[in-house]
Structure formats: C-alpha cells, structure tokens
Length: 153
Image 1 (cartoon, helix red, strand yellow):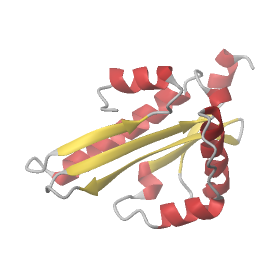
Image 2: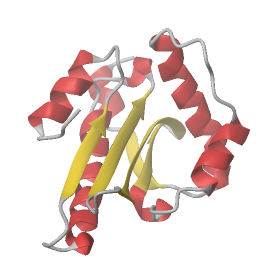
Image 3: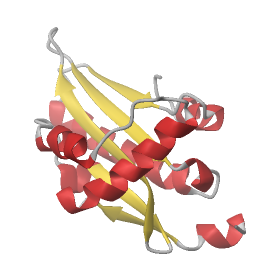
Image 4: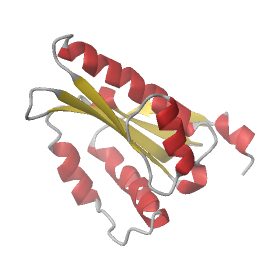
C-alpha cells in the first residue's frame, strides 16, 4: 500500500451505534492478535460494553476511521467519576496494525483531545480530572505519540 496515497483516503466519522460494532470488533481483535492476546472479543461483548457506558456521549465521544470505506480504526474519549470525587477521561485508540503510520493516529488523537477538553470543561474548575491514554502494548510509536501530546499512559 502506498502510504502517502492512503492518507488521502482516510475519513474520520462519528459512531453510528451498534451497526458499527462488527467492524469495531474486527479492529479490536486485529489489535489483540498483534499483541499476542489469545482472548478475542465478540460483537455481543461489544454490544454489551457500549450499551452500558454510563458516562459517554457515544455519537460525539466515539469516532471511527475509514480507509476507502472500510473501518480500520476507532477511538473513544469518555469519562467516569472516581471514588475520591475526581473524574477520569479514558482515551482509547485501536488501529489495525496494517493501517498504522498513515495519519490515522493523528486523526484519532485530535478527536480524543477535543472530547477530553469538553469533558474537563463540563466538570468545571473545581473538579480535578485526569486524562489517560490507552495505547496498544506492542506499538511503541503510538505510545510516543500519546506521551508527546501529554497523555498519561
């Protein structure tokens, strides 16, 4: 694949609901396989997980990346209250291993940072909010990109 041409065919789009779960599950399983994780998820697992995200505005917090019409990555930046009264914004990125390094990470990180900023602003100045980025274990480049943008891993 010519990576410079591929970047011109990337589309960042909003999460559409459970209809996206099969493609998202495929991406997540590709990442798991790359990481040597023997436990693969199912679409039913994703339906259940995304159906119970209490502190997420999924059409805004979750975004998918398509390459030539096929989902190759997704991210989500959603918050949760912590027991000590603070909040935590979790930013997860899943990028198919074969689609890395063509601009997808930047699209997802831009989206995650915009949504994290919204969550911090909504919490207000009196609520401490920690922002965490979750990176693929075997992708040191993704970890470097997150850290360069100030994420805690």
